Length: 279
Ligand code: C2E
Ligand code: CA
Ligand code: CA
Ligand code: CA
Image (cartoon, rainbow, N blue to C red; front, side, top):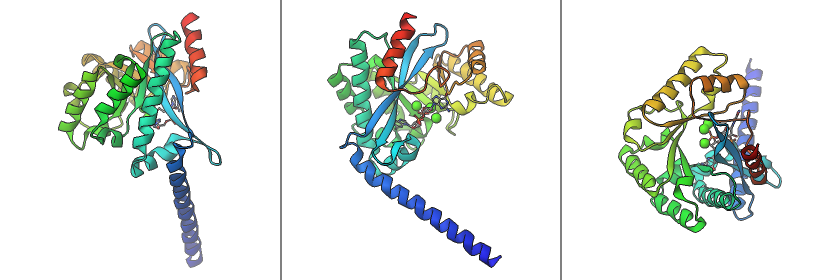
C-alpha cells in the first residue's frame, strides 16, 4: 500500500508539473500573441426563429499559436483574466468585431447585430464606456448594431456600480444581454432594475431539453420570464431539430448553435449570411 501511495503521489506531482508548465508556456506565449497577431475572431450566426433570418452574430476569440496550434478560449481566457492580459485582448476583440460589422454593412450584408463578450476585468476598467464609445466612433458602427454579452458574475461585487455602468452603456445606444443565463447564483430581482435587452439561455439547459424534463421546464420558465419582462430570449447551443422544434413551440425568439453553423471565419460567415438572405 505504501508503494502504491508513493506512486500515486509521484504521478500527482508529475501531472501538477505538467499543468504548471503548460500554464507558464501559455502565459508567456499569451504576452506575445497580440503583437504577433495570432488572435482571430470566428463568427456564429443568431437566427430569428420566426423568420429564419440571421439577425445577429457572436464574435468568438480564437488563438492560432504557431506551435501550440489552435488554442480554444477555455484554455487561455481564465489565464488572460488572472494576468490582466484580457484587457488589451478584449480591446482588440472589440475593435476587430466592430470594424468587421461595419465592413459587412458597407458590403451590403443584411443588417446584423454584432455580439461581443465582455470579461470581468474589462467590466472593472474605469474607462470601459469611453473605450467602447471610441471604438464605435472610430469604426463608424451605429451603436444599435453592437450587443455586449455580460455574465451575472459581473454584477455581484458592486451592484450599485454595475447598475450605473449598465445605464451608461445603454445611453451609448448599445444592446445588453445576459450570457449563460441560469448558471449564475445571482438574484432574479436585478432583472427588473437592470437595463437589459436579451437573456441568453445557457447551452447546458438547451442540450438536455429532449432527454430531461427538468431542463425543459427550466427553458420554458426562462422564456416566460424574459417575455414577462419584455426581454428577447436567445437559446444557445442548439444542436438538433428536436431542440429547435421545442424552442419554436415555446416561442423562443432567437437561436444559435451547431445545428445552424459552428463559429466560422469572417469570409465564411459573410457567404452564409448572403446565401441565407437570398435563399
Ligand atoms: P460563450 O460566450 O458561452 O460562447 C458560446 C460557446 O459555445 C462558444 O465556445 C461556442 O463555440 C460554443 N457553441 C456554440 N454553439 C454550440 C453548440 O451547438 N454546441 C456546443 N457544444 N457548443 C456550442 P467557444 O468559442 O469555445 O468559447 C468559449 C467561451 O470562451 C465563451 O463562452 C466565452 O465565455 C469565452 N470567450 C470566447 N470569446 C471571447 C472573447 O472575445 N472575450 C471573452 N471575454 N470571452 C470569450
Ligand atoms: Ca457569449
Ligand atoms: Ca453563453
Ligand atoms: Ca457558456
